Each structure stands twice: as C-alpha cells, then as structure tokens.
Image (tube, helix red, strand yellow):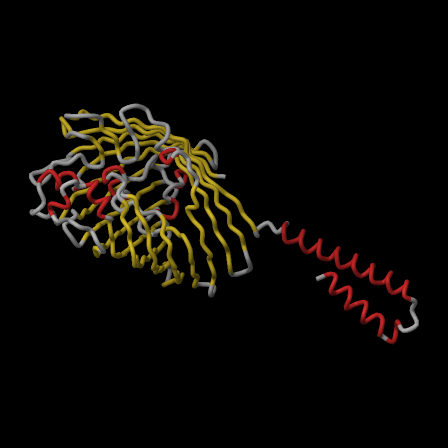
Length: 409
C-alpha cells in the first residue's frame, strides 16, 4: 500500500504546477520524506491499538481440590459422580481455565475460553468460542459455542471462587449436566420500576456426556431451544428457565448402558425432552441464601427426575459457614421396565452438606465441606443415587469430604 501511495505521490508531484520546475533529485527526496512520515504514522497507529487497555483482556481461574468418598456396599467400591472415590483423589476437583476477550469495535467482542480438568487428564479444550454483538444498548446477540443457561450459576459453573460450595449441589447441577452448546442467543435487558431484567432466548445443539452413571453415554440434543428470565431487585435474584430438545442416544451407547436393550426393543431416537428450572438467591453481604428446583422430563421409557436444594450461609468477616439440604427423586417410572434396569437408571437421594469458606485474599478462597447422603431407596426403586458401584448400599447412606483452594486472576 505504501508503495502504491508513493507512486501516486510521485505522479502528482511530477505533474503538479508547483513542482514543475523542481529537479528530479528534489522530488525523490520529497518522496522519501513522505514515506518516512507515512511509516511513522502507521507505527503510531499500530502501537496505539496494541496499547488500548480494554481491547484485549485476559483472565482466568484455577481450583485445586481433593476429595474422598466413604460408603459400605454389598459389592465393589463406590465413587461419587464428581469423581470422589474411597481414597483421596486430587484430580476430580482440580481444574483451570483462561479466557480471552478481544474488543473488535464499540459493539462487537470475540470471546474464547480454554479449559482443562484433572478428571479429563487436563486435556485442554475450547469451552467457549463466540462473537458477542450489541445491536443496541439493551439488545445483544451471541453466536458460537456459548454457555448453556440452564441454572442460576451456569455462567460460572467451573469457577469455584464464584460460589461458596466446594462443589455445586449435584442433585440439581448433575440433573442435566450440560455446560455449553453451539447456538445463537439473543438477550434483552430492561427495567420495570425498581426491577432489572434480562430475557434471553437461544437455539442450537449440544452433545452431553451422561457421566459415569450412564457409562458416559453421549446424549445428542438437537433443535435445543429455550428461554430464561433473570430479574434482580436490591439483594435478590430470581431466575426462571425452560428449554426443550430432540435427544438421541446411539444404539451402541444404549446397548452398553442396557445390554438387553435390543431384546426389550428399547431405542432412544429423537426423544422430545424438556428441562425447567427456578432459582432464588439473596446476598446482602451479611447473609447468603440460594435455592433452586429443577425438572428433567424424557418423553419415553427413560426415568424422569425432579430435584432441588436450599443453602444458607452467614458472613463472619473472612469466614462463611454454610449448610445445604438437597434431594433428587425419580418420577414417571415406566412399570414395563424390568426392576434391575429401573433401579439402575432412576436417580434418588437426599443429602445434608456442612461447609466453610475462608477468603484468604480478594482473589483466593479456601473451602471445606462434608456431605452426608441418604434415602436412596423407597418402595418403588432401590438405587445408589449419584454413586457408581457394582452393588448396593448396606446402610442406605454414604458420605464425601471435599477440600479446595479456588482463585481467579
């Protein structure tokens, strides 16, 4: 470009009346001066772009944790759905992420987040990759790999520092263990009196790993669409969410999960499935309260579930003791399923969790919690809840201890 501009300048200088009597050497000197000035201007512009503090931002998070599960079973060992086993595990709760935000102009931003966890051998993956564009001051659109906004804490589900628990209540957050999706999302922010609202709608698809309880069967959610509304007033936050999709599990994955599936004629092809959730949170810097209820319904023989939790914590300087009660129960059980299959697929448990968080610095938190799980069975099903084991529980109870250090940077 600079060469072309030099040629144009040379042509104009050569034919212009002011330079008609100027010698060729003087013209060449003028051209060199112009090129130096042009190069300097380009360099200044490039350096100013790189030095803009808000153009490219990098931040991240890290959680280093350990956990141990304890349960008496009739056969084999028991491991919790978060990876806690009968020996201290340092992998299941350890994870890290780095996020890059690039401001393209005053309305557009590109976001990429890399994520790795000990449970996945720290194989880094692109967890987020999307373009966020502000159509107006109150309406924005995202497209790419984005957060699946199912829960109250979905936006930072892996950022341990952002919440007081060591691990989010599994009874709710493992009900539909979806974190990201490839989708388009539109959001509208508005106010009604003293209340502020954010209404979002999305459409896309996602592949969800069913976790160890399903032998890591892959649930393919197509035509995944939903809407959610988050409203805030003073120290209160309320969130309602609804989504639906056509869900498919390959026959190979289904046969691995249920070996007699072909004999029983069981298939899982484009099953209409919906999720509904409602959350409430209060945080005034003195008291903390969070509660959520959720329901996951499959439109076939697969057991549906409903769940909820309530947490209450108290700020005591840098300390916060916290207590949580949670449960998950099956519903709409198919009586035509053989008992062992029904027991293996149904999700039922209750839990009490006592924990404490200590804010070491403004960016580092230390946390510990003890969870007691019980009531895995009733007259309809005999389950092991969110524990994975070859047998059943001898005493209908189990426990998990978790420790973590969480930080953001």
